[in-house]
Length: 99
Length: 316
Image 1 (cartoon, each protein chain N blue to C red):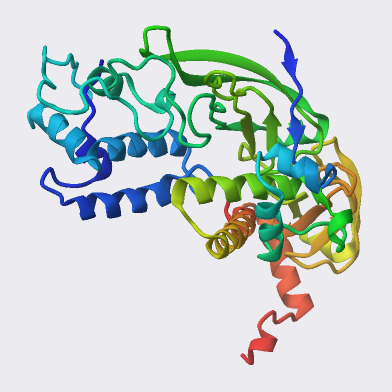
Image 2 (cartoon, one colour):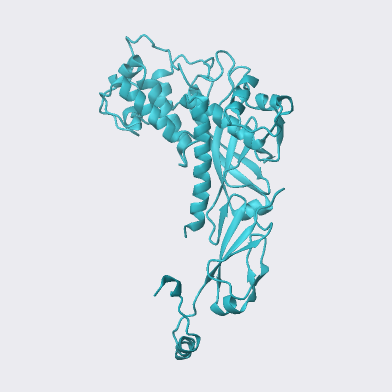
């Protein structure tokens, strides 16, 4: 059987605005809105030099699904993602204490 | 095929109002959304709820579903009665929202006649639709994150055949787990999701990394924690002890006067990567049992000679 090599969505891969839009089949305007809302944090501050990490790509996918499946607006998506991150961090901390 | 009780799936009564159905759906969709839920079968539940809502939100589909009668039980073997949907406008109509391939055989058997493969998924508009993305969790051991691994993953995905019937197809993929993966990270396998409609591209498969609980290590981000039992004399006098790490045992120096619960950092011995994590060793002083006369005598001697009050800071 062929062994599939996927892309690990981590902080080491970097994408341009164009590549990010293509990867999530979304418009640049939508990505810019996500940046304005603080959902995505590009590496450089100037829009023409924006680079996004794999974490941003993962967040953009999640944002898209939350918008499509649950009808959440951007502010709600930003809040949901922050809370999900916090739950993950707390869960990891909790696991360290549990026997 | 199995009968599906859409009311039971949504946790509502058969006489629920349309508003109640909508509220139940919104609540369950949030609860089981694969990006939100921590439950293992979230994606299946999410699709099930979506299918139930697809039927119950539409008064016509709901009425024809109700016509099947209330005596059916979930899981019961089901075959639609002949001409059961006569008199309904949508006859042969089928799927309006969502992606047909996400729906069950049961749904197809009662609403899917005439479905010819040209239905559009909700995400992409008519004609050519991109296939749905799939999500799955892959359980790995902590050691796999240190060394990298290959994992076989068996996925069940619904497929639509030429006659429009939905069948569940099992496929097994062999996937490389790269070294340095962390809990919750996702691996994207392009084109391994549902097949697209028409010229639409296939969806992607997302594998979320989850570590099997480890018998001795705990993981937090890229850092790893180990509770290390030490004797009172090792802690008091200092010692060099063997410590296991996921990459093999190392020697650790314990300085004299180390207390219980001290956190000793082994730099860059956590999960590897460009910025590797650390391994934290948390000391736990364990007492030898006083189960022989000699052991008892040693404890009694310490009691007499050390004059130590561990509760002095508590004012007693």
